[in-house]
Image (tube, rainbow, N blue to C red; front, side, top):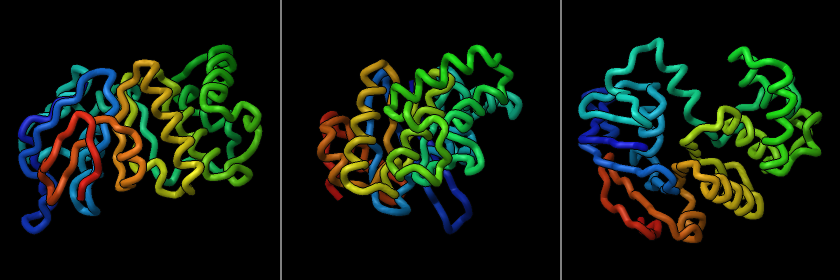
Length: 226
């Protein structure tokens, strides 16, 4: 599913985000990537989304060679991934239903398909009763559930979750992590980028630890040790 081979990323001569990183993630895995601020976690997300070019090495995601991907192919690549961010990124003037539907509308999906798919996804994430509410009428946990529903709209094989619980309290954090685990059980590969020690240690899944742009630990059933 994901293969990073000797990947390096420099933003300048002084700023080296990644140094010859090798990571392989198989289809269906749930993997946490952890490390202190500046360790290189978010840079990996940007590289996987082809937001930034690599300085050295090669990245493959789901059969795509991102190192040489053409700009015109990047939107197609991204439709095959779901992405969840810390700050939700919901459109404030659209309802929950409209936020999730928008991802299908921009791809030209017919209204009938949208009417079928969106309610199903809202039920999967547990906010079907919030479909006609606006983001500012939702709790933080509900907003994140809406963003997860939107991330699943194209039935991605890979879900990238970049600090998805960073703005949530402990109860909502647990519920969101449980939801990500449920999605993984459906067969979706989940990559969780986080600095939350309690979340990682509770999951008892594979943990890749970064420090100063290098992989210093890769444990099949790991703990956040830094």
